Image 1 (cartoon, rainbow, N blue to C red):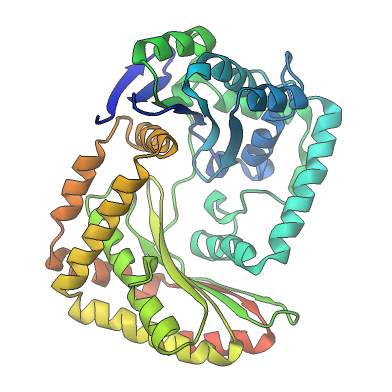
Image 2 (cartoon, helix red, strand yellow; image 1 turned 30 degrees about the horizontal axis):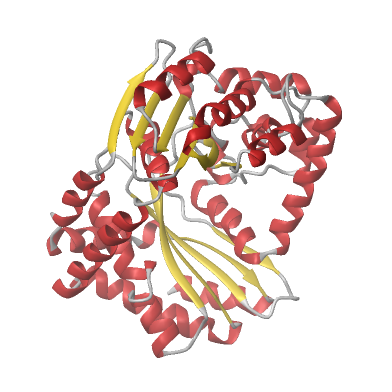
Length: 423
């Protein structure tokens, strides 16, 4: 039986999407706040992530332990995450427990207690998180390449976790002000997928969140034009170099995004990709190499990551140059394009057999496009991409005038990267 999706909009602006999957035993639910780290002021650096942490520390009715025990005693799990343009809180559990689970999730979302002792305690937790990121080159590299690609002073270029210095400035009044500005009806999306009935879910959501204030419109700084920058973090204790290259790309609303998605698959998204086959399999220059797309409402980036011995860095960079230039000048083959289409569509259909994936698809659709996007419509757009579209995407994507880089590793890494960039 195919899933059935319905969308309802409450009077206060909350958008609700349900995906009925009667054959499933589970239900996945999410409440999304349509603001993340890019909606922070400079003084609020790290606030969206900090608020996410604080919402799990208790409400006026439940302590942090009671939240966990209540959710887990119902056979469910709960988590949350913060990214640049939204924050999400999610629960997955038995479908017949939806009402009791959503009661806890909605209480957490709208009624944080924000105890002063807990605020101080959570600041220390996030200090440890920041230290952990800096100790893991692959994670710290994400911060460095964002800084290079978007600018150190721009919200997109700042770390989502904040810094020890920015955390110190947070006071309870600041946290309350951010929560009351962001966690409002017009910025809230609720998505539910599983063995549920839309009308019953809508009634429960309305009862729990229908009186949430609508709030005012949110603004954020637009993405700056490409300004190629390069970051190097010397770490003599590292045996490997960790490298990221970033090219400016289309935004998530651009109709060319389907061609760029398939181009990224052919470049480095899976084990059949050119980067993986040439650099890892044929030449044995690294263990890990991949590419990825980052998309926002007003800009995007195509990024390449690899970790390898500094001795292999120059060879790997030359191989990357050859691959990118070939894509720019010759495009891709018909076989590569068809295989990429089959991969993306097949993987998406498989993932959507899961209630969590359906919940995520519905939530992101409403957040990003203000409507539910039928996955099969997206698949049709992918199928319509031509070889000429991919060739045009490659010429657009691999523009050296938008290239940014970041590298972590021994001192010699910097020189080898600088020499390649100079060419």
